[in-house]
Length: 188
Image 1 (tube, rainbow, N blue to C red):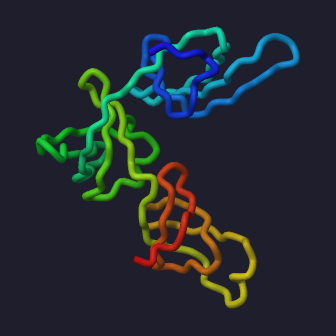
Image 2 (cartoon, one colour):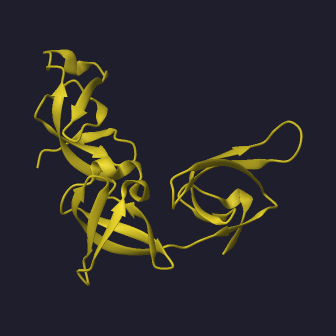
């Protein structure tokens, strides 16, 4: 499906320069001289390389629709990760480059969506949020909860994030899989 250059949004998959690219960041720029354009940061879905490209409003770009199917994450073995189709029970293995940065948030038994194009798996879409335990942070200081400051913490998967002062070591928190940021305390 052809779209105008100014209709590109983050998350769109484009066919560009003979490859499939996902728009990661999009910024509309209107210089003092010349016409406006979209500055788009693209990530290649097959090898993970990045590319910054300018698209004018008059340029037509091919937007691609990916097939999406539910899978369950089974286990990881080094840089290979195995998933099972929840309907047919077939298993597929993807490498770390195909999954991308959210690979650190994979948990056994997690339901994910695998995106594919013409039968070839390209990437994994994780749930928006996951629950993890805090393995290391500064101790709670009485009276510090009134301030809106955050402190550094290390999660059980090794990811570093900022948490509110009332969060201590061993607490479970919910974090965003997109950027690893603190969402809320997990009281379940």
